[in-house]
Image 1 (tube, rainbow, N blue to C red):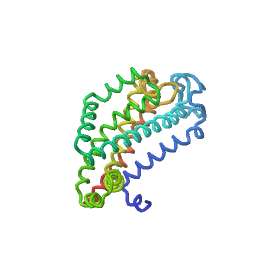
Image 2 (cartoon, rainbow, N blue to C red; image 1 turned 45 degrees about the horizontal axis):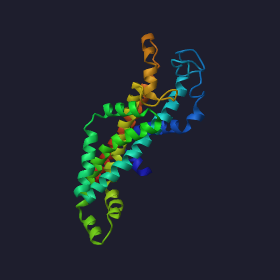
Image 3 (cartoon, rainbow, N blue to C red; image 1 turned 135 degrees about the vertical axis):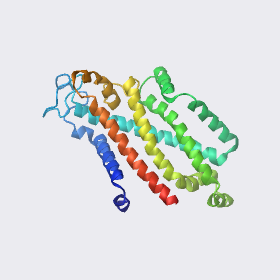
Image 4 (spheres, rainbow, N blue to C red; image 1 turned 90 degrees about the horizontal axis):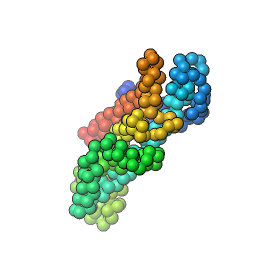
Length: 272
C-alpha cells in the first residue's frame, strides 16, 4: 500500500490529504471543537478573533465548531447513503446479470420507472410527504442513487459473466450466488470502487442541496449546506461566514475526485 502511495501523482496525494483531514474532523469533532454544536457563545456574525477563529454565525454560534460538526454529520450521512445504495444496487445488478430473463426485465423496468423522474424533484416530493428525518433522508436518497449503481454493476457483470473462468465455475456446478460473490464481484471491484467515490461526491452535494432548500439535515444539527443558507444574508454586510462551509463542500468534492481520477487511471493501466 505504501509503495502504491509513493508512486501516486501529486494530485492524488493532495486528494488523500483532504480526505484524511475531513475524516479526522468527522471522527474527532467532540475533541477538537472549543464549544458545543448548538452553544450560543457570542454576538451575531461576530468577526474573526482569538476566541472565534472563523467568527460566529447568524445566531452567535462558533463557526469553526459548526464547521467541524457539519463534517461529522454531512459526511457520515453521505457515507451511510452510498453504502446502502451500493448494497442494493450491486446486489440487484449482479442478480440481473447472472440470472437474466424475466428477473433482469423486472428489475430493469423498476429501475427505469424510478430514473424517469428527475432526481431532485422526486426527492423533494417524497421528503415533503414522508418527512425529513435522518432515516427517511438516507433511505430515499439511497434508493434513488442505487439505480445508477445498478446500471453500472449490471453492465460490468454482464461483460465478466461471459468470460471463460465464469463458464468453468458454472461447469463445476457452482451455485449462482457463489459465482456472483467469488468470480464476478472481485473482478468488478475496480470500476465499482471508482464509482463509489463518484457516488459519494454526488450524494454529498445532493444532501447539501437539499439542506440548502430546507429539506435535508434539519437544524439545529450542523450541516454545510444549511450553514450556507442560514448565513447567506451576511454577504450583504460584507461578512463572509457562508463562504467557509461552501469552501468545505468544494474542497472535499475536489479531493475525492482527485483520488477517483487516480484510481481510474490505475485500473485502466492494469487492464492494458
